Image (tube, rainbow, N blue to C red; front, side, top):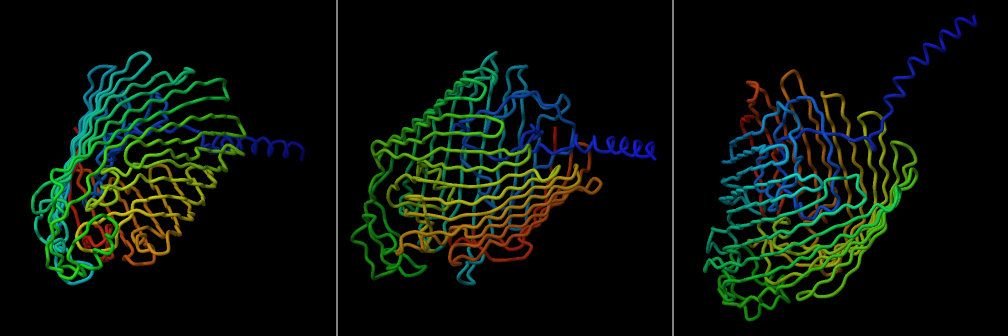
Length: 580
């Protein structure tokens, strides 16, 4: 009997050993992912925390290429993000191309190549093109609108690795050509936005040193032609910017660190001609439109006659500078991780003054896989042309808008690695925001922008599950309850109330598939909720060639991403990708 008990205990200890070895450490382990294609173009000069540079080791796998038939969804007029300076694997292909065509005249083109100029030098170039030209049904009528939107972007990034530092040069160019809704007076359908960026940076490349630093400068340009009040003359306006940033930190001890980040932003504006013709207004009540634009300095306009045209003078945009300081202290212990700092923003010229917001993060890791945290942050978000264009590519602004000040973005959350491959994140909080960018709810052409308070109570969860290389599931649900001044609640109509996103990817033999769903309801339900179900299939024909098909808006619903601008009904896109 004793011998049997001893054997049972011995076998149990053997069975328990691998289970202990597989204990999930999702929140602490380092994951290196090969990703030869990254379509997201980010504002790299605003990254304050540099990632660790490690020698990656990955196995060869199938590479999936992002594809979309929605116009302007991939367009972000910023320089590309930094990439790993060394190839991921010796036999990885350095280039790829991806092409597609859809039933609404949708076009898609992507090309990228990574030049290896030696062990210390790399040059990455890429280009992208997408767009559509089709007749879409307007939201408030059965009338058809001949919608056109095309965009092009070219990017380049060169990096050189010194023994203790990395030097980089980056640049980008982007162009959007499109047309407003026909309610804008039909004076011109040649609207276009042009953006460019060139920058240089230097950063430390030895992450184990006590002193860490980064510094860089970017020169940016954003031009707008044939905007609402300049359709007839073809005049435009432009914004140029100089953005310098520097950061330094010192590791006082194994647990304590001090740091300081500095930014200096200068914005310069020009307007070709300050006298413009207000187009006749045939899409609704001109009096309502003018009432929404009250207080903008547009006086003497004929409110009685919708078909009348008036000559007005737009107020010029003022140049200004924005200085940003972010001092902080960081403490790292086994049971406590703490960051205490402040975001100090000082503007001179337009919207001058000093604004202060917290920069605080407290984390309590009470096990290897569970973290409870409290965070409070904020700061000034410049109301520049790039941010307006990200809100809606059909934007317009009659007068210069103040910079948005996030007084407080407070969040309480819980992160957990439930099991191997399964992560969960729960959070809730409150946002207190002054002068947020908001859309005036009137479908007369462009999305005219205004400002007001936009406070929000928020809560949500996200979850991710990965089973080997067979299936991956991600889900996110976020709820917002918005509030602002009593007389301006209509400005919140485009704000999301409940946002649900689901995505599942998998593989059956050689066939790769992806299914996704998005449901986004808007404040007060004034806009039809986004209700999008899509499916993508891809199949490799040869070693480096595959074909794919995507079906979007499978519910065939009518909804809007931007106020008044319809989206495509059920649509399909066929394409092929090649690695070389």
